[in-house]
Length: 315
Image (cartoon, rainbow, N blue to C red):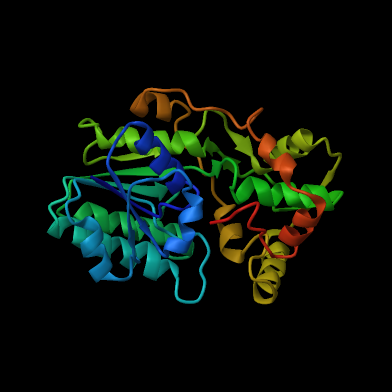
């Protein structure tokens, strides 16, 4: 039995599908059974619970041989801070896994995880990794660059801005580098890790086959949409002030001050990382982001104003 936390999320639903396709016995941990629509073909066991509830985690880990831990937040909200979900939540699931005698713990993290508390999200990811490494549970940590695929936030948000604005604002010089990885490929990496003795105890970084600057990603999205745009490069300080204002006024602003801080560094690793560690060549975002074409003008306007439609990103 394999437990998947964050099972209804962007990566989680693909992991569950990949495990099911292999005929594996799967258990999912979900906040509420009302989220089951995110896994329409799933026939396995489900535990309704929360990474902040040790009692539900004990039930979830009962009889489990391996855990793929995906539950995390990329935006803080009331009752779900980085420290609570990414740090304490990881500590809680590790405690339950160790008590249950789990033999493999696969932890999904982020390229760029850092010990610098000045970048709160990446710091929380690093802190979670420390919990995993200091635990008594056999583990592998897989750090991913930004993911793309139907239901993503990064590419869809930029696509929305491209649709509604002939001039697209870019924070800083637009030269921050990314190595986008397809969400299905990220899921494949995690599932492959379950059976790999070579990767045991390691921290692996995984990204796509190409490096793209932020500017190049905006250009690729505009090209895919057939849109003619201009980019306005604004000082990071100005963009941070605007982002802070939007964060105070809207439930889900297109960008947050914390996300802008991450643009000061690169989200990259070895271009051959996936092939080297997982034995396959991941797909490139070029010719693989047609899903952004399904964003209508009204959806684009909502996203730009801080409201993410559920038909675009429903997790």
